[in-house]
Amino acid sequence: MNTIKLTQFSHGGGCGCKIAPAVLKDILAQAAPMAGFADLLVGTESSDDAAVYRLNDQQAIVATTDFFMPIVDDAFDFGRIAATNALSDIYAMGGKPLFALAIVGMPVGKLPVETIRQILAGGEAVCRSAGIPVAGGHSIDAPEPIYGLVGIGVVHPERVKRNNAARSGDVLILGKPLGVGVLSAALKKGTLSADGYRRMIETTTQLNAVGTELGQLEGVHAMTDVTGFALLGHLLEIARGSQLAARIEWARVPKISEAVSLAEAGVSTGAADRNWASYGHEIDVGEGMAEWQRKFLCDPQTSGGLLVACKAAMAGPVLEAFHRLGFAEAAEVGALETGAPRVKLA
Image (cartoon, rainbow, N blue to C red; front, top):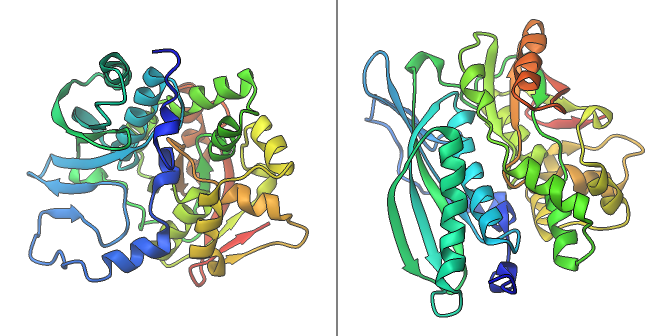
């Protein structure tokens, strides 16, 4: 089992597998409208992280699904990363997960049963950490390994944190450092150090459970998690939905140090280029910003951090919650202001 390299079975890995934003927009352009469902609080209208359906005045169901192909070769680590990433969508809505269902597609004739079992065990371990069961699921025989979860959670209808409710003057706080896509590209090339791999696993398996606590704070206006569309793409979703302009300060963005060194040396992902092609026309790049820096901000983040828009007076409490729950590198990275929905890099 130790000789099996999961990434050799897939054409892409992690959140880098996501369909490019521009292509996805075209695919969904003719989607049926959600009008007529008064209790559907969040649907497809704002490119949010999960659907939310009100049950009563005190409870709403949060439902999401997320799955992808291997970003690492270790089966247990792959399962952990995929499960952490899937549950993040519930936390990004301010919700609390209740249970999960497994999504499993495996090349059964090519992967040993024990390898597949280790993938599932990794996901189960993360769910235990989140305090929830994997209550079932569905499996198919597929040409590439695919694993993920359906996540079901609960949130108070008045505490839902959408990605389109930011306000002018809000500051932006990012919970995890960037660089996972660069590290994954180096891993595929065989140039990632042991410490770099450790950092990659550490950040991609850290549950964004702080989102449940942040969901209780009045001054937190909007949340999302930074995944396949990168920091710039997911921030643009906030800006578009909220009809605001956004500003990001490169120097304040937390970054994984080895990923920075690799990016400066030219390591990047194809998904970073696809992301830029999809939304680069909505980005104002500051003078002196190098191409590698732009690519770094378009780097797909598998199981990335929460991006929070909150009023300036709440920045301290929000950062305190992040730091107390183990997100040591969480930092204020920018702000939102009145203006056309764009992102300015400084």
